[in-house]
Length: 198
Image 1: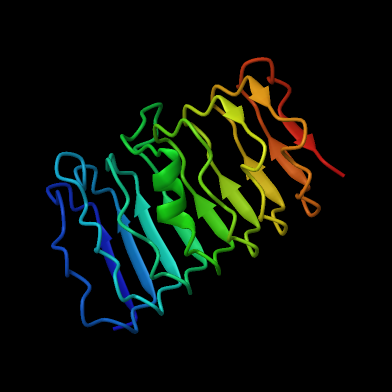
Image 2: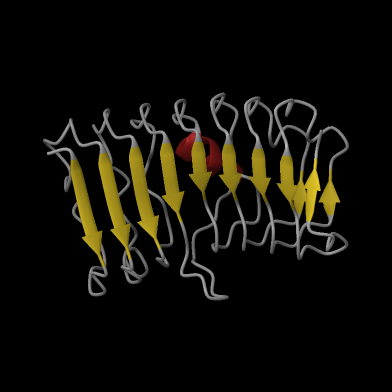
């Protein structure tokens, strides 16, 4: 099997720990419109274990409270994790330890979306040297700290609109030599739309 596609499974609340076991060649997982997935019952931490060939992973328009461990997904190129949208936020948030544990294995990822959740901090990108685009729109992020973006040297677009950002460290973007577009609309004191960095 090369791909798994599941759309609008509204009654789906969780999946078994070994749901994808025995599918090492799986390359695409696409779940969309399953708004109850992971809402009451946390998604099993080992849900994606062993998926070393996975290149595209989408959990779209859900209210999940956690993300499974992603450390086995060294081949993953596109990671799309969106909350419910429509002005609503998902339950997913991170502390510092969780940020590094969840994302430090994504060494091949070029695009990551974590929008419309309850994130109050930036996810760890220190091992994402191939990352081109990151979308964090519609979260609760208040600041960008020194080192938050360290390692993302290929990042071209960082989307931070509709957060609560009031503080950005002076050196926060020092490593982002490829950066071209930094939309920051609808943040406090930053309502001027897209800022282009040359």
